[in-house]
View (cartoon, rainbow, N blue to C red):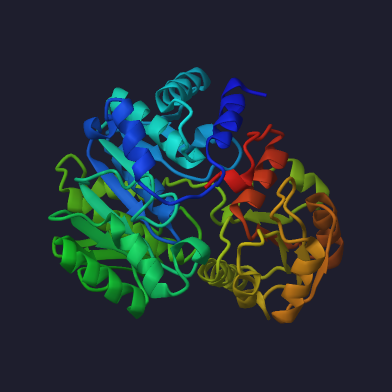
Length: 449
């Protein structure tokens, strides 16, 4: 076990709950650490339900294409905790080094003095220290859960706030209606500061506009103040500053056009003269974001299936993510038909029927598995039953490897299958670790928020 893993496991014991939304503990610890959040480079604060990571990755790629640097904070991690903290450098950054992470975690642990604090709060404080002590042009800061009471919402004066599409998710913490959830996400809006808002359902948009008016935030709304769409195989972005005619983004899926448009809007709101239209084009052509409709490169999992089989990986887990992945698969199938098979595992906190429903009539078979090592996984038998209830042909399997071997046999015929593994970021992390023969972090998925 890595030294950082041992510390992270110890930090889990500082609070009886994995999630306890509040800012009081965060303010206390930051004060003890000398308030590093007050010494950060300009911050882009990103909230929302879907597309946060892709939007952040697109912004980072654009900034780096301009030869500038951006620290980035994301969650959860997929394989190793270090993925959460990227330290920027001109033209490209790197994940935090093991010894640097160990030193920061120990410093935060000592400053906390065994007081109650959640895992996410104390590790976010460590990220603030890292970002304050390393120069960069920007900090790209992704909300962990919600916004208003999230540990990242200690930024009083962001360069720009971003809210990606809001949907039903984490209802037990954020509220049981779209309006309540949107209100929590809108909690990152700050007085007098600009905010770029992705495409929203009417109910969510109304709440965001109300909160913005109350706090005095300056909104730029998708499909009103800026537009981004596909036209003749290219991507067109337009706002008050003019039109950009661009190649389609490197990330797969039509929903990535919306994410790219939101990233461009945020970049243009920064009004950094060092970032040009050419940098925007170059950045979007080279965005990488793991487990978001990612076609896996050849590796161990391909040895389990017939030659030529495509294996795709996506970490989406809620109804809107299901719709987005299904739409992407439909587009792929129209251009290059193949037998479609979904291998899925989900946590029991998620709406399996909402995620699975969009795949009805599209995939040939659903192969349900339990997420390895996750005590809160939906059992494979139960998940298969939910898939059947959603109108899908499904059956349970005892492991990912068993499911993949069976998928190759079921597809049959002369055309190799297109297999998509999805339903949870925690499943995605297990898949990547297995595929790459890497050792995952010892911190459980349940604690990864």
